[in-house]
Amino acid sequence: MDLAKVFKQLKKTSEETGQASYLVGGYVRDLLLGKELRKDLDLVVEGSGLAFAKAFDKQLKEAGRLIEFPDFDTARYLLPFSETEQLELEFAGARSEAYRSTSRKPKVEPATLEKDLARRDFTINAMAVPVAVFAKAKSPSKATIVKNIVDPFGGQADLKEKIIRTPLDPNVTFSDDPLRMLRAVRFAAQLGFTIDKKTLEAIYTNRERIKIVSAERLQEELLKLLATKESSIGLILMFQTHLMDIILPEVSNLDGVEDVYGHQHKNNLVHSFKVVDNVGERTDKTWLRLAGLLHDIGKPGTKKFVPKIGWTFHGHEHLGKKMVYAIAKRFKFSKDLTEYLAKLVRWHLQPISLMDEGITDSAVRRLIVTMGDKINDLLILGRSDITTGNPFKKERRLKNYDKLEKRVAEVLERDKLRAFQSPVRGEEIMKVCGLKPGPTVGKIKEAIEEAILDGKIPNDYEPAFKYFQKIKDGYLKDAAEWEKVC
Ligand code: CTP
Image (cartoon, rainbow, N blue to C red; front, top):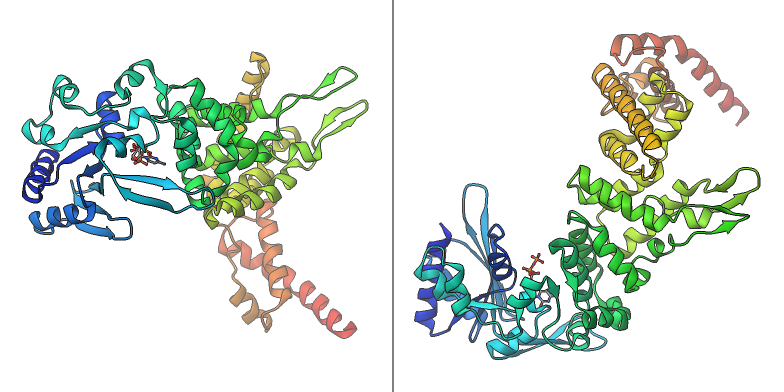
């Protein structure tokens, strides 16, 4: 079903139910910005949102899927759009929503359209266009939209001026839903807009209230910020407004430059933000950008000034990994995301040690086996970690990464290591040796794997089995002697 048809049906539902309907929020904002039209539409209707959605569904002869939220009198409608895409319509009755100081659940009351718009986050999101305008012309001109738009708070002017501003006193808007403070910094990064002075000050004043926002919403918004091309714009704002101190104090703690006898280390906060942007230039993966943000969080806790050597951060990758688990718990990250971040933070220095110690086949194999399918992401992180202002140094380090990347590709191709494990499996070891499951089986398997990683034998069954036959008696003897002692 195409959009024009959807708008016609919406208009029909409005006529049938006597409920006026409007498009609001991101769809209107992006339309005025001339952006690609989105597939998620927010609709505000007079009266009950749920009743309107039900009537719409009936009219479409249940062509889509209606998801009802009776507690909020809202509904979502999922409509097949093309073979791969679907349209997502959110229906809500015009209402005011207010959060009490201690609760995460809003108090919802029916209201006029203007009141509904007033209770929204930013003026650029607080504009409504009657659905009828879209039903008339397939794609109405900007002039037609501007003529019919309901814009009580100057959203169009703010779009032109590139300003993020709350429709009401920002203290009220942020108190209603503190997540909006994070949304403000995200929109600043996403749209390249400036946050209005009063609005920015209110973020600072109300920052503590972000604590009442659920982990899931915080996580979603953080990842949305990291999905923007230049996330550092939002990250810097988070830091300046002290939101960062509450949400991610581990990142705030990276700030600062210490000086001992004129020896300074770099500001790791500035460095980490740069790394996030560098990753952003190389890939769209938001998880990897988050790894970039967190890769050095172990530095403040491991920092030492060692005479004759200078500043050191020994073990910061180990401490960083531990801290990642704590952050993941706080944000309720999925297991996959947690393990991903832990692995990248733990091993982010490994490519550099490899380059320093010599890129041997054996070292490359070990790196591939350690990282599994995250190996390419580790190399992107490593390249992005180069933030030196010295162009010669930068070029030399990037060239080292070119070399390493080439070697990784060669070893991967040759040794089929992606899902690496001993070609001689545990069951076979037990059968041949007459062993029951236990530590000796594991030790023999590990010895075969080590031999492959060291390049003593190729990663194939025949040579691995031969090697197994050669070493097994030694392990069996050890096991027998151990049993005697016990
Ligand atoms: N909204 C709000 N406060 C929030 C979230 C949303 O006032 N915390 C309002 C805004 O008017 C917003 C609309 O609800 O435009 C739709 O919300 P959402 O889909 O989350 O945001 P979009 O503006 O559409 O942008 P994005 O999808 O990029 O988040």
